[in-house]
Amino acid sequence: MSADDLPVAAAPGDPSPPPGLLVTGRFDQPAGYRVDRPHGSASWLFLWTTHGRGRLSQGAAQVEAGAGDLVVLAPGVRQRYGVAPGARHWRFWWAHCQARPGWWDWLRPYAAGDGVYVVTPVPGGVHERVETAFRRMHADARWTGTGAPPAAAPGDDLVAVAHGSAARELALGALEEVVLLSAVSARTLPPPPGTDARVREAQALIAADPGAPHTVDSLAERVALSPSRFAHLFTRQTGQSPMRALREARLRHAARLLESGDLSVERVAAASGFASPFHFSRVFRERYGVPPGAYRAAGPG
Image 1 (cartoon, rainbow, N blue to C red):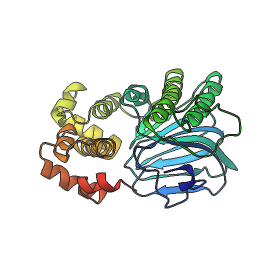
Image 2: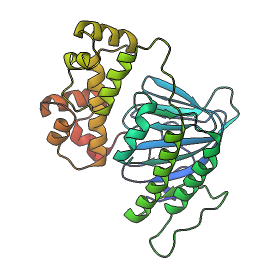
Image 3: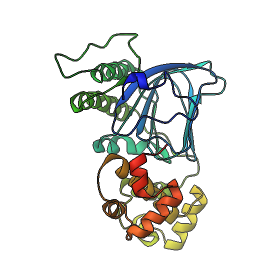
């Protein structure tokens, strides 16, 4: 795939770039711009807003992004985004790619649910460095492997596709700088009013390792509650039972493994916490509409 194969900007119904690629660019979209991917993105999507405002929703999570906000969307969950109501435009850098595993620890404190991470507020003194890293990523993605990578230049923000592993890894290094600078310099969002700290702790335990053998009893013990009290509190505050939340987290984890590797369906099931590959295949198909093997072959969305 080349930049010529991609639209100037995604439109409702347009698929995301195929998994395995690194694709990046900068858009400045007017009011009315909107993207709707019913099956989510095939890869992780990183968006850094420089001007205006955007509204992004994924699953049940919905956020607005202004200048200096980094929003990260995980693959495999329905996503919609566009210019926020009342805003005249939305100018943002973006990148589709497979995220490096080491980024999870930086992003985890900013989880907003359903695979959405909102890194804000990033201090103003860091903004220029972050945008410079995005420009360098854009330039590095165009490197052919011969001679020096092209220099980043203001105004040079057309869609760029990294061809070859060297260009992709170099560009990922620049994106890693974006994630590190933003996540370390920002302070985490305060929890929603009324959210119990023990529920948040249980959610963090699930997100950190969805493949672990979590149960209602084990999670309740970790947060010092009785199983019945924990299950009631978790369900009341999140709208779903602990085991339903765990199953959704495991399915999202399985989808990412299918997209980014060549593990067998049986290995993916085990790594995602499913004791039976037959049960895994059944619930995966219920969630994504296709069995795991077909999902890997076609990619979501």
